[in-house]
Image (cartoon, rainbow, N blue to C red; front, side):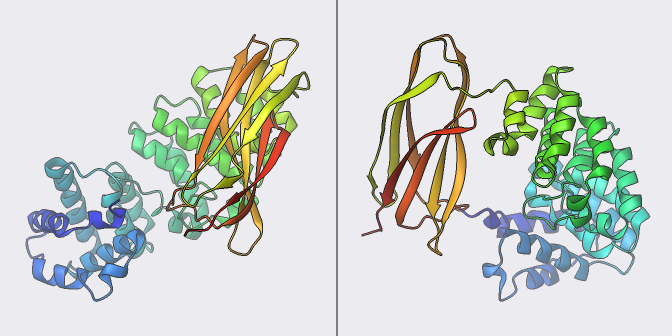
Amino acid sequence: MEPLKNVYSPVFFDALCTAMQLSFPSFSTDDFKRLIYSKDWENKALKARMQHISESLHACLSENLADNITALQIANAELNQRHKMRGFEAMFFPDYVARFALHDFKLAMPALAFFTSYSSAEFAIRPFILRYPEAAMQQMLEWATHDNAHIRRLASEGCRPRLPWAMQLPAFIQDPAPILPILTLLKEDASAYVRKSVANNLNDIAKDHPALVYQTAKSWLGKNRHTDQLIKHACRTMLKQGIPQTLKLFGYTPADHIQIADFKHTIEVPWQGSLQFSLTLQSKESIGKIRLEFALSFMKKNGRPHRKVFQISEFESNALNKSIVKNFSFRPMSTRTYYPGNHKLDIILNGQTVASGNFTLRPSS
């Protein structure tokens, strides 16, 4: 699979240079490409390449920051129109603002609002939140009522306390209260794109303040179909943790009437092979509302287990039994490294572990 960082190819830079020359006639393609293809370019990861592009652009522009940002806005719009560039590959534009306009809040905010519509400024806004917390959060409140869904999403996504691959916001990890007015404004947003961000923000908060998210979910639940879906997604970490009051909020109560029969699983999994397991839920009455999960305690490099919960399904059934068959692949993943050795499988029913088994992942031959 082609690494994402390779989106920054010679063809990409040709298009970028053409757009820059239209917006900034004195832009030197030769100088820019010489800076881009530094001796460590090939070794740079995706985010490092984005940062390197914004730094190289700055070196080829003027000393007037406002003029530079205007030129970049024109180039960004040109790239979108001609090459449909509308995604992560354009995130070096807002990165430029974070790197070189951090001292000028009034100049930076409309620039980030512009650039987020073509990619996302969720990373770039965070240095401003750290430096200007009150002003930045007031700006986010204003963005939360903007006509543009991309800008409304930035209001939520940009202040996530634990946004992946981004600098954390320690003050909001400690006290997320400044975030909640923004999320409240957006909880019934017309855009699913925005509502998903609200859910992800609440899920971040739940990792440190589960009681706050539970009370928020309880107060929002039952008033809007889309908000109900948002709340369920926001509570996913607490549901995986098996917190009883959270499970009960969504109708999952202890399933003491259900027995686990015919539980079988692979004993030895070959390297890059699959774990297979099966079981049957049996009851003398209706099975009812079920949340079925499995947990794997992976062997880590240090020899200690690391437990991760995966969902199998959620359903409601009047049947007296139901058979379940599941596979889990141990093929390599960029986000998870596997190590040979002893592993453990747990079956979780409405938050309670109801069956367990051990298996071995064999080393590569």
